[in-house]
Amino acid sequence: MDKSDLLKKVGKRIQELRVSKGYSQVDLVGKIEGKIDTTNISRIESGRTNPTIYTLFRIAEALEVSVSELTKI
Image (cartoon, rainbow, N blue to C red; front, side, top):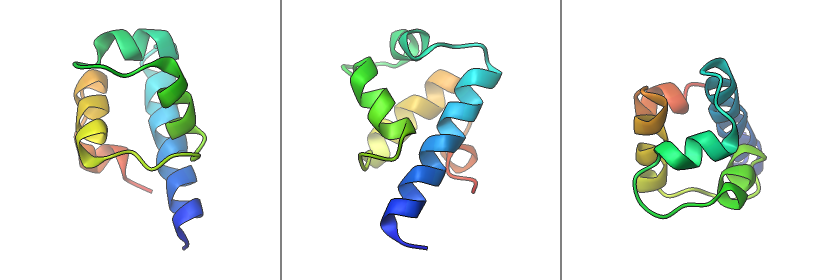
């Protein structure tokens, strides 16, 4: 698996978890501590950017899951 495939799979997993909770991208941004915008969430979910571990941690907290749950592919 190359980097691009990995980013897309993690992004899809984040999107699946977000949708399963009934959150829009705007809702998710509102639950994340610190500065992040919907454009960044969109790029992460589409696999177009490589989020830092801290960003993954904040997304996981907002979705009330573990980081390992986010990266389960």
